[in-house]
Image (cartoon, rainbow, N blue to C red):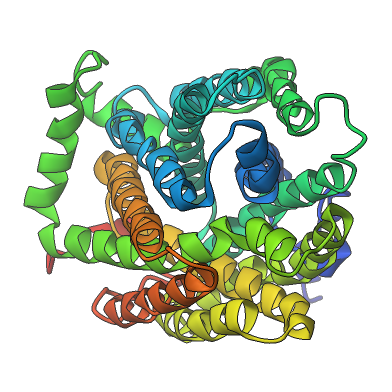
Length: 441
């Protein structure tokens, strides 16, 4: 008698989490623990994106209440973006004290600074509180994507980064929904910032369920703690110097891409609300409807870029969407009124897609010992690029129509950023240890 052979059972697909909307596409067959990590990280990103959306949506009302002239908007928003510079010193500590601890610290900082923003009595206070908020926002987002990169398998890493970005972007939807009723909210725009208390209320859950990444645990077990965790300028610069010595070409190109894309993209998004409410005389509800429905379609760019990046490569996807972005900016700021909603969809799709590509490359191209530092380097260059772009728009804005003209002009920088992507190594479907072992940088 022949022994009976048993075919191995096909892998069981896990139930789709309820918090992943069907319109964001299918879910790979992943360990439920990985999906749980994704959900917690996305929840934090949700509130981070909500905070970011407030400055875009409510800028007109903030400017009126705090007596900020249009000619000074570029300068003040540029200062707020530069406020993320301290994040450049904080993020590298993820390579020393761990991803989890810095992630939790960022959640606390975001929540407190957001609530204080709503109490601002003048422009100086508003800018100061937003600088603090922006520091922890940038830190939290950078560490969140490091966590996803280190925990997800190579074949689905892009999907994880893209899905986290898409779910986090839904925070813009909450911001738009609340902004639609700004006229009836008590204290107007200030009430929008009260929502900042929610992350602190959820902190016990984050502490309980967010764990240190396995890769960092192995690195710490093998090499011990890097330093004593002390915070200071030289202490913060040391990891960057080590990154520059070890991977100079990759670090330079990642920083250049981040700076160019932020230079071209940030002004386009910063003045969306102000432009539609002042130039086109839209009511807040109409702007909110565009953000909610158009943005809901556009955020699919996160997942599309993640999946395509996993299948055909990060660089090809990045070049295409970086080239399409200036076209969408021109259609929004220089086109007829009917072109605003479709151009908005294109703006969101392209910017979320290129963001996924850049974040994936910035974390995949470097080893565990330098991954947090690389994310900090990207945040520094993106911050500098965004501030420079906003500053240039401000310098060129003197008369009606200048804002649209300057915003369209600086958006061309994203195309240059896309070209620079071609100079970086391809990373899709390669394990992190294989990528960082290359010694060609």
